[in-house]
Length: 417
Image 1 (cartoon, rainbow, N blue to C red):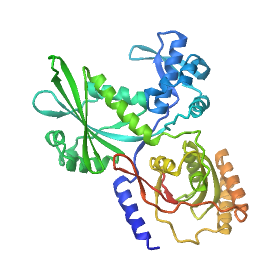
Image 2 (cartoon, helix red, strand yellow):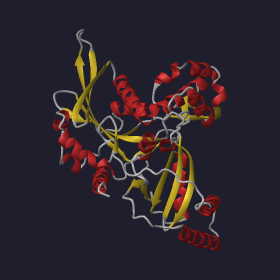
Image 3 (cartoon, helix red, strand yellow):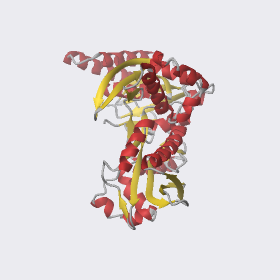
């Protein structure tokens, strides 16, 4: 009990900094848009490669020997396709078979980056003459090039509004000077997982040729870290930056789907989720866990008094799971309630009442019916169920940029979108 104040302090700090952390969800993770003006084999291979790069966050996947062999028969992975036109271009919209692709990567022990992607806030400035200027236009070549790279790697870039609130804290000169006190304060409102300050200028190299230089600034463990990229064009410059960032993020979030855990603490977790006001909320909660690559299987143990206990079988370590869970903004860690909450009898009463209400209203759908059956079965078996290890509050997980990602907890609150 003496550890509780420290836990509460860590929790309050986390929530004040990252409350409802925004995270993009890719809906086209296994889809690709490729040029239709090429042979069937060529567009099939292009789509195959594009999906693998998004799934792994790296072009290096195409150097894998088995992947190169499968590339020659990429048509076996095509699920459906259709022709489309956009901006005068003839495109082929291709969907790949998710199970076949993930099986291939799992067999090769290649980590897979799931559909939840952390938001990266970009402060983008350009020095064209003597004074730096914010890059505000959506169609600016720099932002267009970044959008192309975001699409390639599945990155989620967000940009500041540069409104009165932002400009009350900083300006072009302070951003160019790397004033991270101002940048940090202005960035809080966007609740991004990462913040990048990108400074672009045009220089001459030793031979007199014009070069673009990007200075990347970020804070790592409270220290300002700089990284320079140079290229002959803006698209090439943004490609270098995006490739580096995608490699960092995929290394942090990608999961080896063929990894097996033999120790109970890493293989199984039990979480208590509060704030579930209806069976529909419970179904949505189950969908969240079903969509997580780090979860192999989830099973409802009990449900009552707006609270569910769920057992999770993991595909990876608990650290991997909590890093992924930190991107689920509908689930926020909370202080464990006192023991002695909902018992089996009250839970069964809640289920019976909810089921009766749903049946009488005629609104029960197949998803909710399945949830009801699962709850009833779990509750009947609860007394004889074996004990499952539960992860109590521990220290926050830190990423390599010094940002708190997830507070390991056994208790979470469900927040409706």
